[in-house]
Image 1: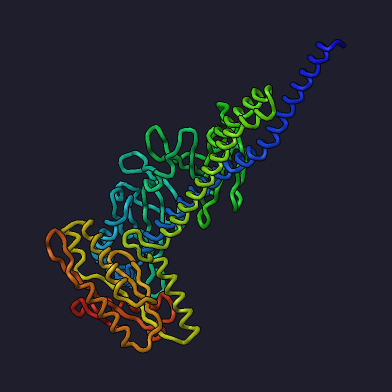
Image 2 (image 1 turned 90 degrees about the vertical axis):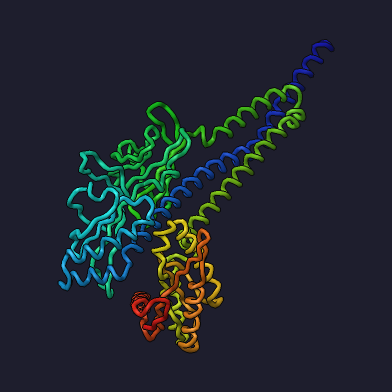
Length: 498
């Protein structure tokens, strides 16, 4: 072998060695980072499915609370109990109930109908935009469901959220309320990119709720189009994920998430290009750059890969930030489940939980506390004259005044409508409850300015003392509610003890 041939052989060997070394080094450095980005992309997609499921469950919980608030009106429950005892006629019951149910329905967004049943499930009254168009006999079911109904016009209603709540009087179930809502509150959750889809399936896989993107309307179909149903993938308590191929050859990744406490589950799928597209493009680009630059030298290949790796690290950071935003959204949803959206005070569910905790504490240390049922006087005329927006502003001002006049350890929240509850900390004597109640009446009576008018409402306060007037949540609520009505009957803007 002459010198020229030997030199050529050394150069070829060196070039091959450099190329192989460059590829090996790039592979060793890039593979762990690419795997990490791939895993984070899949985790981010799963977190999105978790957030969608949590949002839909929170919407179901919120509608359940609305149904419970409607059914909790004590004066309507007492009338229904009188009807069941034969003390009043059905006509008298309807005349008393209808205007009060219509008043309760005014603030319920997306409400389509309210149907009130007696304890045997016989319908007594119905109100709402489509109430008269619904079938004459609607069987009562307690379980939350989504159903369609034939209408008097010969058409079929859109899917309606079916929420029920029992009506109780003196711890006895005297009837039920059935509320039918449109699904518009879920619209923002179902609207998404064209290469993805969100749907609801009942646990028995008999019906499927989707948003038709052509018409913009919710539709109910059989479960046949569902990928999970076709592949017979079951949903575990923790949820499942799987990959599949659509009829047109599109590859997708699907996530199944159950809704705890409800017989429904959320299915979310997206094209794999949507989830992993950026990662795949970066991988292809990295390989091409590596091959091209490794022809020159392993060192140059490594230096040229640095901007690509920085880009991958940036994407990983963006994925982590997106995951954090999803977690913040979940925390916000959990807060909305416990606080009234208008006033920011604890809502009815949170108040009942706080009242139960107060009873347990009082049992432990043999102390006494007061539950105050506060109902605003002359609030409806303000709504009627100035509109609901002015009424909402007045409620927010009243809420701030109530927070400012109670003690630091006391709890105040919105029970519903223009009703508030105050749970005091332990009392030395009942005179302390009288002082707090008078403060509440005083701040509620302060003028409120609307359109240059000085508007004045008031408050009637019913006070129940634990354990003198009740030892359970229900007993204290009923005692304070009855005392409040005695205060109203005595001329309003006063205090009455149970």
